[in-house]
Length: 402
Image (tube, rainbow, N blue to C red; front, top):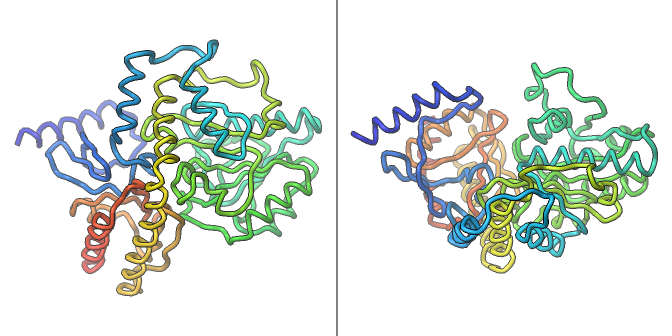
């Protein structure tokens, strides 16, 4: 009974004091371990949301927790006016395990996108002049909620009411190389794409699309930016999603899983591009602070050194996909498509996904819906067959009652 009043008070205070920007489920989560979380009443949930692809190692991974504890006892924050040891370690890890030569740190995915936009425009200005500033992105893309990232986003529903947006962005259909080729003009400085469109409902391009985009960018002398905020850090079964497509970008945006649950963002860039950012070109007060970087170092070292995790991601991806395909065969009038890569998987349904999400939560499984009718699954990369079996059982039970 006491838990009930605690939860009721927290929900009531939230509605009283917080700006109402989220449509929250009436659940107060207070503890997490691995793929499981508990609410204030002690009820256990299986978490297939994972903080929306943030908790790549699961909740409270011991290595990340210890790294945070140790760093918190040493140093929480200093300015980027000085050298920061965990930041340098993180930059080295990222550079040595990617295409890039340089890193810049910020606090979120949207900030990473803003930095990438600025860097691309600065590079074009340095090499071609101020007339070359446009960036081409895709319809149905999602790049963030700050004004630059929002202007780059290709979904009108996120933009409504915030006009006028920033100029200099053009949108083309995703996975359509001919449309992209026609959109490039003398003003184009970069193309920015998600390797897999997450918020659009987990849209995976054809195998040759990104290779064709890379070739086209090389032909036209323009930069390729990949927004891997959602797909990076092992989410697709590789450390970075671009590795699946046999290409390398010029700039990449990272966040979400980078800190294993702690807020941190980054861009990585080739040397020739990174040179356009010099003293005073860009900055972030909290970007690359010791605490966040220590968490990110522990996260990346675990992903790289523990071969089990990425292997498990790929094995559990196949296991989860097969379970979802079985549901599709059982409920063909409800399930329209199953798609994804690694543990970024979408199930497109023919009905509103909101009630499905609610009924799964009632049965102790947390899932997410994007685009109104695509159930999105982004569990920890350490998820097990037994936990996936529970998800499939609950989904079947819910669909039987739809």
